[in-house]
Length: 66
Image (cartoon, rainbow, N blue to C red):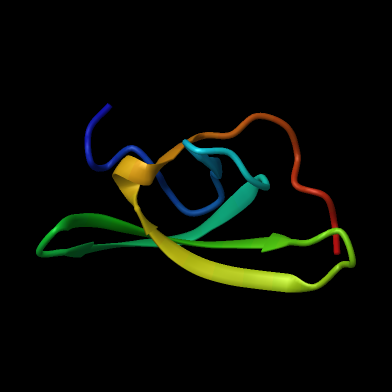
């Protein structure tokens, strides 16, 4: 896959595991594509973080609502 593989609305997961996340936006920086994501924990609390595209893989399923 290319560096432009993720788009807003896609679901992704860290290659190392973790919750299913929704892509909010993508940004290019000097190190490549940075992916901004959001997800809900088991208690319904929203979390947000950014990750390098290389750390993510396409997710399957539907993120659980908060």
